[in-house]
Image (cartoon, rainbow, N blue to C red; front, side, top):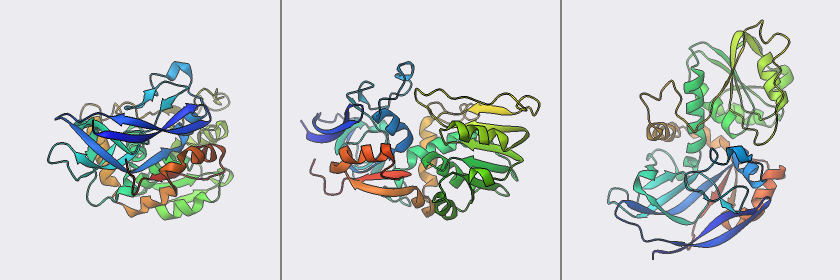
Length: 328
């Protein structure tokens, strides 16, 4: 056996624990990875931590290397960056990204890891899964040169979308959030900022990522006639009232869902999941994206950190977990 590792488990809704796990010896087509950093995907992982995944979505929400089942005990997560210690010669010593939960070391198929480009620091690479979501959303949204766009909801996903939109020529981008502290993040990303009440209207496109009814309603209000809202929020088992009365039909508005679980139909014929993730990692060469990492804790602190992230006591976009000096 390769030895043991330590993993973070949701023992029951609202309670996390660190467990020792035994690792298998890697086969010829597998890698042993020592984790450097993982990231807490605050929206999805806090819903999982609260036991809010609806039974109808258990299969759809299953993470690639999840162990256990919802609502718990379950080992869940998908933002992991580490160093390959054993495996094929071209990967040994490489820093890689993997859709793996919070665990000190792990064994996975070599095909499940993606090398991190040299220009991307390991600590920033934990954002790859979120930037991949943003890439897929923009493949769905298909913004055009000169579009007027808002991103409603300045969380981790919304800010990632805004950061990518800032690169489009001639596009006016505004990040809209009720938390005025998000203005600092917007400035770092090179986009405008507004509170919901002050947001600019007559928009071609709104990307909604606030996971609130009020945010969705405001997104529809901000559109020009025949404009589109791309919905990125996931509400778990919550029911959401959508304002489809009033002028929704007469203005011929479009409300479209987008989800990273499938490659956007706009690129499905020419891009694979691996292509999409590799693109996300390449885009992380931009140091402006460091603004999305707003907190960091040691792995051993994770059982106490997760309740604080859920309650909002620990405010964060991406909260990074460090494994420096881990002893297996």
